[in-house]
Length: 457
Image 1 (cartoon, rainbow, N blue to C red):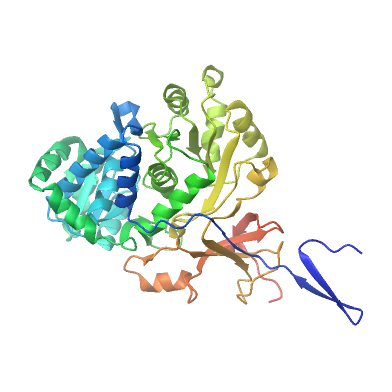
Image 2 (cartoon, helix red, strand yellow):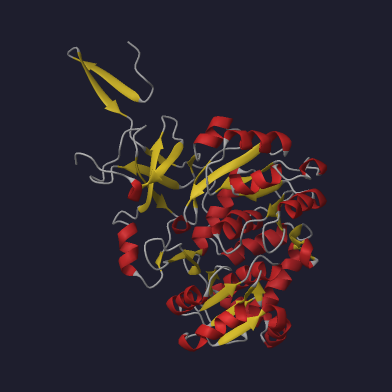
């Protein structure tokens, strides 16, 4: 009789005792976690690759090396300090993708301010909630996005946002802010940096709020820096990589999977525009000779189906990330063969886990790229439990996916009740996603708990 590899047998007095392998995995790694702040890691990269390109935004004619990027980030950090902000104060960023967004991201990390990501699509009620709930003191914003006038929206709610003291409209006030920052010395800035701790809160991202008001997932340097680092490790990033980023920066996909993965490896961040345009993305990949391309499956499908697709050269591409939804096998095959992305990766996670918990490997087969979301990330733990009993289920059995480790958020901002409802006493983050784990540790997402029907129990 053959016994499957996921079942262990022991003969004793001619009785077979069977123990089923449980749905638990821990991510072993020979690389330690980064015990530094974001600015400390960025400075290390700047010193290692000063002349490598750091950020390229063709549509804004902005292109800088890591040495120049560090200087620009410092100017913005000083500008923010000139408004009297200090460590722990909240700075809102309300804009679509542009180079100023990236500079604010790293400038706030240099002074210990907590950057609050504000969705470019927010209307008045959503903006008011985010500004009030996180008590934003300084709002850095563009004048608008598409047909939406941000100034008009802000004017509707400004009187009710009592903590909001300063507003910088990028299109009008950016240089004024930089000029004001000249009164702050480099020594003052470095003195502030020396006091920062990698467990400090550095970012608030509001969840979708499908079960009520959005909740502000509060993330630390340690959370997002390490997550970006290990994403880049699994994609085998080096200083020679250029990552094309058409996904939004306000979301973890842009600011962690892309920006943090780049700065931890000396790779170049390449922004394609304020909104997704498949033709612009393909042109950017060709012109900048990008080695990596990000997107949700629908973005890749839009590129593949574009009437000018055959005109573009994708020979520079090697890898990239598809996330946000499962990818049809036909699309995955086309991306790998027609776009030369042989090493494309699939990621799964949630904002509350910084975000990636599982990821495929560059040499995984087509089935694992399409049917699973990969294996547990380094230094993290996964388990799949029975939602009613809380017990870990056997491999191949559906249950709720839980994550534990460095990536789990600090809390929901100013919301201890909501925090306690998702992070248990063992510091496991309950995702609400239904999943299955196979005998090799690969995870398949099959639904949400709220969609599950309980029968007979």
